Length: 287
Image (tube, rainbow, N blue to C red; front, side, top):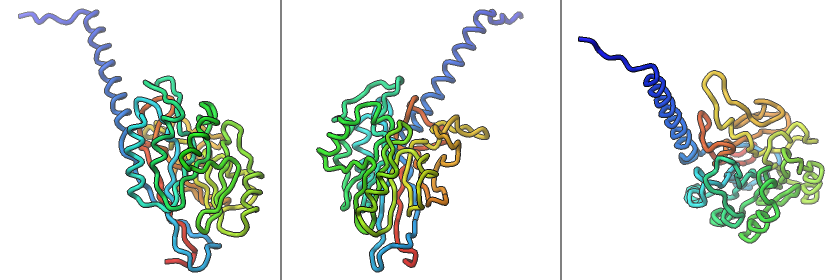
């Protein structure tokens, strides 16, 4: 009995079909990874100039929300806001890039639609945003207006006091809007106290004139697509992987770089799950 073999053309069609199925599976897995609930990472940072007797302060830091379809519609962000509120932070900081205009997006949203879910964030000491490059490329004035309408503080090379801490917000370095001297001058005007910085890109760290208590950043997405062995394709940093991801001990102070909640360029993640950080600040003599 002779078994008929597939023709060469049929083998080519089958191979292409299998490759398409494999590609679709990879994209589906990447989208699943991108839309998983974020990992809540924790860190405790002790500050030498913490006021005696002051209780610890819980700061929830998020970044790179990147509202756009299919992975971060406003409805998903609204659900994540509920999860963040359940953590009971004293203060919430957001290290920029509220929006995404990626070409692979299935839908782009208005500034009002992007910001509206963030109006539901709840923390006794409020919510602070430092702008990111995508915010500037999209429409920073419109985003500013929507944030301020909802009582969210925007720090663009400015500073505020929250609890015992002085918080400086440096505008985006990647798009050239940062002004470190102006930020430090604004912190100086607020007097003495422990200082932290909120910024989008961690690339400002080497340029800081003096150390601070901590730097809370984002921008790198922890690579977003990080392959085994070879690592991430890019961290979009002029310092390579120096400020790639996580808690980094630097001469200018501890740096926390979050993976972010959303995605840029493509709505997929591999090896770099979405995350947010709960950072507990306390005195160096506190238990």
